[in-house]
Length: 127
Image (cartoon, rainbow, N blue to C red; front, top):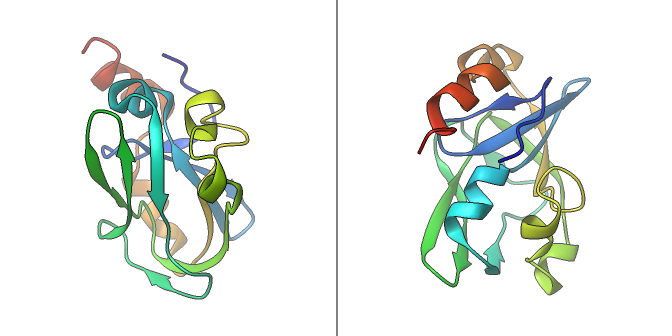
């Protein structure tokens, strides 16, 4: 399981990379391993407002269908359209080409509620 230092992590297995006031969001390597091959992803529209902790879309894998939860609140300013045609990018490159969306954060203080890499690894590396 790969865990990238410097990212923030939610207990729902989303990662956040801060770029100014923008949060690039994706699914962790642990999540893609647990879910298996991802065959479909439903994402919000650009311009939608997300609230931290609330569902923003869903993902279907060969094993299950699961909701995706917003790690931070804000306005969606970009989505990874490549995932519509190839959702398996999340499996191949969860921290790179498999990013999910970009949010312009309305409350950067919410980042403090997310976990650092050490806490995420401590919580999930032994499952």
